[in-house]
Amino acid sequence: MGKNELITNIAQKTGLSKESCESVIDTFADEIRDSLINGNKIILKGFMSFEVNERPERSGRNPKTGEVCTFPAVKSVKCKISKAIKDAINEK
Image 1 (cartoon, rainbow, N blue to C red):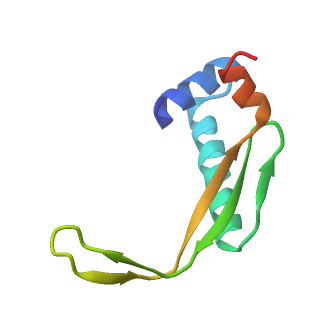
Image 2: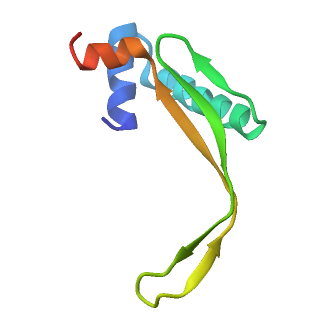
C-alpha cells in the first residue's frame, strides 16, 4: 500500500478530507523523524517502536577486486512491531 492509498482509506473510514489526512500523516512522519534525529526512542504501544541504532566502524572486502576497505560507523533506525500485530498476522 502506498501513501495515496493509505490517505484514501483513512479519509473514507474517518470522514475527513484527503487533504486533512495527508497533513496528519506528513506531520506524524515529521515528528517521528525529528524525535529520532534528537536521539529519542518512540514507542507507539500496541503498534511499533522506533529506536536509533549505532553500528560501529567495520572492515570489509570488495568481492570483485578483493580489496579490503573500511566502512565508517553509521546510525540506522531499528523498528520493532508489537506482539499484538505479529500475533494477528500469524493468526494466533
